[in-house]
Structure formats: C-alpha cells, structure tokens
Length: 258
Image (cartoon, rainbow, N blue to C red; front, side, top):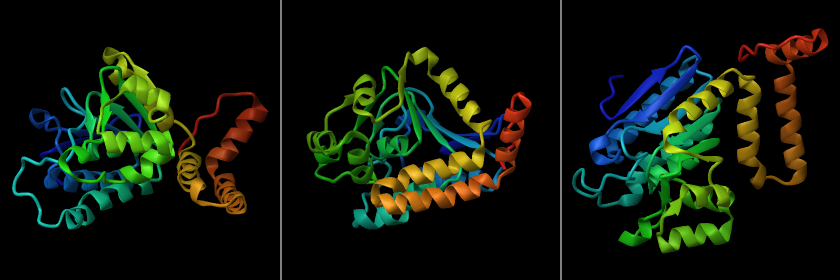
C-alpha cells in the first residue's frame, strides 16, 4: 500500500517504524491517517519485524483527531467504530513489543496511541493532553481504559476532566511512561531500546505483553492459568532451547524470535 500520511520502514535489525508524517498539521489524525496506520500495523503483523517503534515527524507526536480536515461526522461514535477503535484493537493484538518515542505533544487520540505502547519514551519537552473536555467530548481511542490502569483512577480522572497538560517528567512520575530523556537523545535511545527488544525472545515478549494487558481483568486463579498456558508455549520455542544450551555451555545466546 502507498502511504501519504505515514511512513513505514523496517531496519536490518527487524525493527519496524511507523512515523506519523503530517508535520505541517502536527501529525493530526485525519480519517486517512488512521486508515493508513491500521494498514501499516497489518503489514507489520505479516512481516518479519520483531518490534514496532511509533513516532512522529517534526515538532510533535500527534495533535489528535484532525478537526480541520473536513466536515465533522454527524455520529462521532460511528467514526470511532470505523476508525480509531479497530486501530487500537490492532495495536493491542500485535504479537511483538511496541515502543513509542514521543517527540512532542501527544494529544487526544494521539495520546492514546502513544500510551498503548509497551514502553513509552518521551522527550523532556513533550507533553500528554486529554483535551476532549475542552470541546465538550469524552476521551476516546481507549483513553478511559488506559489511563486508570496506568496512572490510577484519581490521576486519570483529573487528567480527563481538567483537560490540562501533563509534562513528560510528570507522566514519568505518574507511571504513564517509562522514560523521559533529553530531546536530543530521544531518537537514538528509542532506536537502541527497540533494537534490543527486537533481538530478544520474540514469542516470550509477545506473551508477556498479552499477560500484562489481561492481568487486571483476571482473578489470581485465572492469571495463574494464563501463565501456565503461556509458559507452555514459550517453553516449546527454539529460543528457550537455545537459551538453556547457552546457559549450560556458558556462552552468549542469540535469539532468533521463534
């Protein structure tokens, strides 16, 4: 598929990078952007990529839904059902680790996309904003599910109801993101992190992200059963056998992702 609003690239290290590429609009998410993003995620699923890195071009990660791209939909809920909701489901369903490099404002649905990653690294100048209440809407693209799980109910409610910016440093303190780094180091640190994950035991990493996503909805007994099932699958991989052999032979393991 030919993309106009995003770029999809894969490195020799098996890192697929999706870059939101509408810098003149601060990477606002028009319907076409969302469709292309979801198509790119499908391509990643079918590829040999072992990690996905998401970032934005220019001064920002994403300013959220592109309200200036045309007439507003009569049914905003239907627009979500056709666009953002399938995109978020596709991101969560990926079997490889996801890293977000937040290089500037991450607003509205752009904030949700960033926080859907397993590891979020942000430039110190970046900020996160749920601005829906400022225009009389409710948070969407999974925000009401993500934020309480990441930051706790009190902070999530404050973020969603007050519609105020949360700095990268504050987001780190709240547990929304993993790391806040100097702006000039963001790209290199994000690539290094994604490359390290891509060189890991891909099946096990995919199972870890699935277990972590589902854990809060399970009882202890259900979580233990899920771990048992996942461990059985991980224990049947070539990577596990190679790691055991490397441990016994006292040499460095090289994971192949299968």
